[in-house]
Length: 147
Image 1 (cartoon, helix red, strand yellow):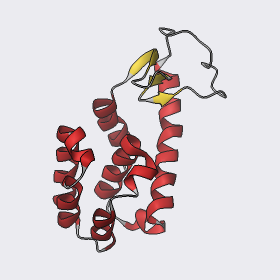
Image 2 (cartoon, rainbow, N blue to C red):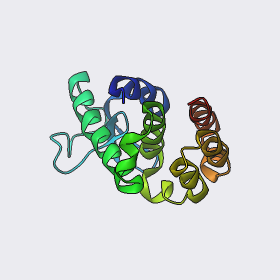
Image 3 (tube, helix red, strand yellow):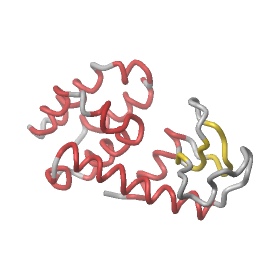
C-alpha cells in the first residue's frame, strides 16, 4: 500500500487543518481528522493553537497504522493479500466510518472475501454511508470496480 497516496487522498476527503479545531461533535481535533488524545502534547491547548506539518504527519502515520490494524481486525490477514488499491480504499473507508460501522457492510464484505471487486463496488453503494458522503463513496467504489 502506498502510504503517501493514502495521505494525499485523505487530505482531500478529510481535510487537513494545521491548528486545533472542534470537530462536528465538539472534540478537539487537528491535522487529518486526528482526535486530540490525553496522551497528546496538544491536549488541553486552546482552539486555534497552531500544529506543525511535521506533527500533523506524525499523528497521521499513527492514525494510519491504527486504521490498517482495524482493517486486519475486521477482514483478517487476508487484507494484506488484497491488491494495494483495495487496501487503500478500505483504509479510507475505515478512516471515515470506523470498524463498528464498516463491519455492518455484510454483502460488501462477502464480495471482498470472494475478491469480486466489481460486486463490492455495487454493494458499497447500497448503504446509508453512500448517501451521506456520495462524492467520496462513488470515487472509492469506482476505484474498487477498476481493480
